[in-house]
Amino acid sequence: MYRVEIISNKSVQEDITDALEVNVPSILYTIIPLAYGRGGSDYKLGNPTWPETNFVLVSYVQDSEIKKVRQVIAAVKEKFKNEGIKIFTIKSEE
Image (cartoon, rainbow, N blue to C red; front, side, top):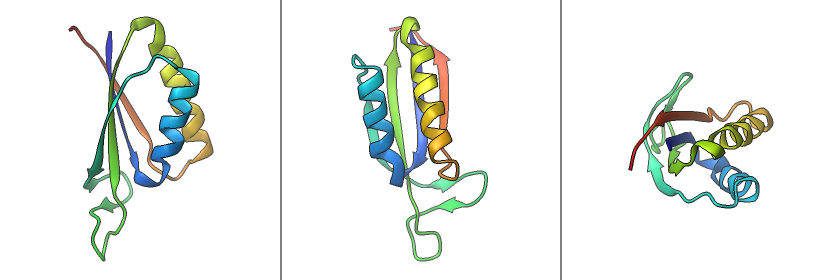
């Protein structure tokens, strides 16, 4: 089992969740809808100076599904190259 964390600009949240649900039908996840921080190119603070925000998606997926999840996110990243989509995975136990 793997813990998956996807952090991205809020503007592509629906694209990411739709792609995951279509391509990995068994996926279950939790969304943290508002995340502030500093990424590679700028800040996401939801204020007048730095108005954008991020979201965080957390999921636990079986070993057999992790490759597909990574492929799905790679495809979304290719479509939205400037949205700072990041995926982090770590081996996990229940």
